[in-house]
Length: 334
Image 1 (cartoon, helix red, strand yellow):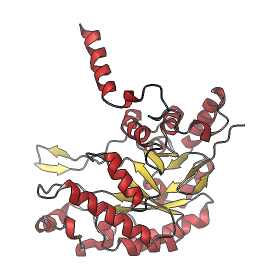
Image 2 (cartoon, one colour):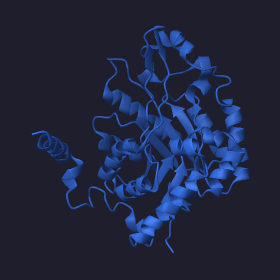
Image 3 (cartoon, rainbow, N blue to C red):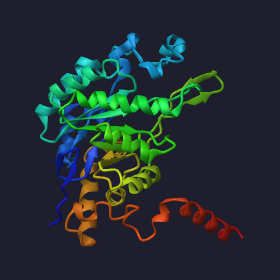
Image 4 (cartoon, rainbow, N blue to C red):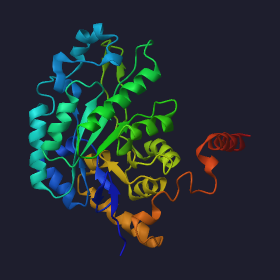
């Protein structure tokens, strides 16, 4: 029998399939369905910085620039007092889920500045969360804000949040850093117990008839897996931390790829929203069958088996892959 167990953030999980932050965690009944289908941990939907601070946002030194536009920006936010369930309701939800299921519950904070984050990180811990995912989402639009300043603010935030916690801390990143492995290393040195790759920024659309910017949601698909797959494979065993791949896992094959690249877990949401919580059981059944058919006795045997350090051609993850694809395109046309 195949041993599907894996370790993530110091938590021993029964398999590498976890539910990522999404509305699926808003109801205890749905979370119980996910547990029954085999999901090994739940990442709560995010508590947003704007909910905590609301109109009294206190941005830190590095991110106060451009604040004169904040009043206008408020019109783009939902009703912050009622968005999701609010800060107190969020803590109550963690407590309810912990009493409803046996699998780990991971809290999620989304934002960038210090503000009330340290306080709420502690409250999430006190509510019973087994770990915390820090979803740092900041879009640097100020041309005078340097990358060094921004990265320093991220690192300082991780240090301060981690110093206030006893539970493990994961940091969810975007891919938009010029030297991602170095930045990842800084975050781990600052106290991150794991890295989640990647945060998908939802891009707004333009309504040219109404002349307004409108939000737009497009679910991920398996092609979105390639970006986190590549960077996980590059950083695996070079950055001494746990990895979660988020975005693009829609099938058992996708989960196999994630683990072989070096991810301790694959975080799934879109396919479970589209097909229902019970689809997790299908993914896991097919995942276990794949391991058995390919003579893997355990998940630990395949972890990182196709990372950059393990494959026969490490350059395939770098410029060589780019050149090879262009050559194949030339060959098909000429």
